Image (cartoon, rainbow, N blue to C red; front, top):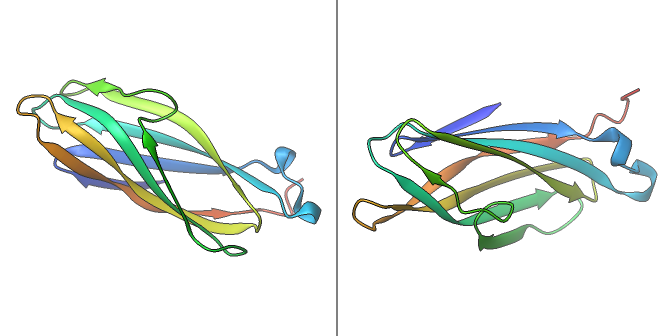
Length: 128
Protein backbone atom coordinates (compact mmCIF):
# COMPACT_ATOMS: atom_id res chain seq x y z
CA UNK A 1 0.00 0.00 0.00
CA UNK A 2 1.16 3.52 -0.77
CA UNK A 3 -0.03 6.65 1.05
CA UNK A 4 0.11 10.43 0.53
CA UNK A 5 -1.36 13.25 2.63
CA UNK A 6 -2.26 16.70 1.28
CA UNK A 7 -3.77 19.32 3.62
CA UNK A 8 -5.16 16.62 5.89
CA UNK A 9 -6.58 14.49 3.06
CA UNK A 10 -5.01 11.01 3.16
CA UNK A 11 -5.06 8.92 -0.01
CA UNK A 12 -4.12 5.22 0.21
CA UNK A 13 -3.86 2.86 -2.77
CA UNK A 14 -3.68 -0.95 -2.88
CA UNK A 15 -3.03 -2.73 -6.21
CA UNK A 16 -3.97 -6.27 -7.25
CA UNK A 17 -2.91 -8.07 -10.41
CA UNK A 18 -5.94 -9.87 -11.89
CA UNK A 19 -4.34 -12.96 -13.42
CA UNK A 20 -7.68 -14.58 -14.19
CA UNK A 21 -8.69 -11.65 -16.44
CA UNK A 22 -5.27 -11.21 -18.05
CA UNK A 23 -3.87 -12.82 -21.21
CA UNK A 24 -0.09 -12.34 -21.17
CA UNK A 25 0.34 -14.11 -24.52
CA UNK A 26 -1.99 -11.45 -26.02
CA UNK A 27 -0.22 -8.59 -24.20
CA UNK A 28 -3.24 -7.91 -21.98
CA UNK A 29 -2.64 -7.38 -18.25
CA UNK A 30 -5.44 -6.33 -15.90
CA UNK A 31 -4.89 -4.60 -12.57
CA UNK A 32 -7.40 -3.33 -10.03
CA UNK A 33 -6.66 -0.71 -7.44
CA UNK A 34 -8.55 0.24 -4.31
CA UNK A 35 -8.34 3.89 -3.31
CA UNK A 36 -9.31 5.09 0.16
CA UNK A 37 -9.65 8.84 0.70
CA UNK A 38 -9.78 9.95 4.33
CA UNK A 39 -10.60 13.48 5.44
CA UNK A 40 -8.45 14.10 8.49
CA UNK A 41 -8.84 17.88 8.23
CA UNK A 42 -11.29 20.16 10.01
CA UNK A 43 -13.06 21.09 6.76
CA UNK A 44 -15.62 19.44 4.49
CA UNK A 45 -14.35 18.64 0.99
CA UNK A 46 -15.98 17.49 -2.23
CA UNK A 47 -14.02 15.56 -4.85
CA UNK A 48 -14.71 17.21 -8.20
CA UNK A 49 -12.16 15.86 -10.70
CA UNK A 50 -9.41 13.30 -11.16
CA UNK A 51 -6.23 13.27 -13.21
CA UNK A 52 -4.16 10.13 -13.79
CA UNK A 53 -0.75 9.67 -15.37
CA UNK A 54 -0.46 6.08 -16.59
CA UNK A 55 2.89 4.59 -17.53
CA UNK A 56 3.06 1.25 -19.36
CA UNK A 57 6.47 -0.22 -20.29
CA UNK A 58 5.04 -1.10 -23.73
CA UNK A 59 3.47 2.29 -24.57
CA UNK A 60 3.84 6.03 -24.33
CA UNK A 61 2.57 7.61 -21.09
CA UNK A 62 -1.14 8.51 -21.02
CA UNK A 63 -3.00 11.22 -19.13
CA UNK A 64 -6.63 10.56 -18.21
CA UNK A 65 -8.81 13.30 -16.73
CA UNK A 66 -12.45 13.41 -15.82
CA UNK A 67 -15.19 14.31 -13.43
CA UNK A 68 -15.28 12.55 -10.05
CA UNK A 69 -14.26 8.95 -9.43
CA UNK A 70 -16.23 5.96 -10.79
CA UNK A 71 -19.17 8.25 -11.50
CA UNK A 72 -19.25 9.88 -8.06
CA UNK A 73 -18.25 13.23 -6.58
CA UNK A 74 -18.22 12.31 -2.90
CA UNK A 75 -18.49 14.87 -0.11
CA UNK A 76 -16.28 14.07 2.88
CA UNK A 77 -17.03 15.61 6.25
CA UNK A 78 -14.16 15.77 8.76
CA UNK A 79 -13.37 12.22 9.90
CA UNK A 80 -15.17 10.56 6.98
CA UNK A 81 -13.66 8.38 4.27
CA UNK A 82 -14.61 7.17 0.81
CA UNK A 83 -13.27 4.03 -0.87
CA UNK A 84 -13.69 2.77 -4.41
CA UNK A 85 -12.19 0.16 -6.73
CA UNK A 86 -11.22 0.79 -10.33
CA UNK A 87 -8.97 -0.84 -12.87
CA UNK A 88 -6.30 -0.40 -15.49
CA UNK A 89 -5.35 -2.50 -18.50
CA UNK A 90 -1.73 -2.57 -19.62
CA UNK A 91 -0.05 -4.04 -22.71
CA UNK A 92 2.96 -5.01 -20.64
CA UNK A 93 3.04 -6.54 -17.21
CA UNK A 94 4.94 -3.55 -15.87
CA UNK A 95 3.57 -0.09 -15.24
CA UNK A 96 2.75 2.57 -12.72
CA UNK A 97 0.19 5.27 -12.06
CA UNK A 98 0.05 8.50 -10.13
CA UNK A 99 -2.29 11.42 -10.10
CA UNK A 100 -4.33 13.97 -8.25
CA UNK A 101 -7.85 14.85 -7.23
CA UNK A 102 -9.23 18.36 -7.45
CA UNK A 103 -11.20 18.83 -4.26
CA UNK A 104 -13.25 21.83 -3.21
CA UNK A 105 -13.14 23.01 0.38
CA UNK A 106 -16.86 23.72 0.91
CA UNK A 107 -16.13 26.27 3.68
CA UNK A 108 -14.69 28.85 1.28
CA UNK A 109 -14.82 27.30 -2.22
CA UNK A 110 -11.03 27.01 -2.49
CA UNK A 111 -9.77 24.23 -4.72
CA UNK A 112 -7.03 21.88 -3.52
CA UNK A 113 -4.97 19.47 -5.64
CA UNK A 114 -4.75 16.32 -3.53
CA UNK A 115 -1.88 14.01 -4.46
CA UNK A 116 -2.55 10.38 -5.33
CA UNK A 117 0.72 8.59 -4.60
CA UNK A 118 2.54 6.73 -7.33
CA UNK A 119 1.86 3.01 -7.31
CA UNK A 120 3.38 0.19 -9.31
CA UNK A 121 1.56 -2.44 -11.34
CA UNK A 122 3.67 -5.56 -11.77
CA UNK A 123 2.15 -8.75 -13.15
CA UNK A 124 2.88 -11.95 -11.33
CA UNK A 125 3.03 -14.08 -14.47
CA UNK A 126 3.94 -17.15 -12.44
CA UNK A 127 0.65 -16.90 -10.53
CA UNK A 128 -1.16 -20.25 -10.22
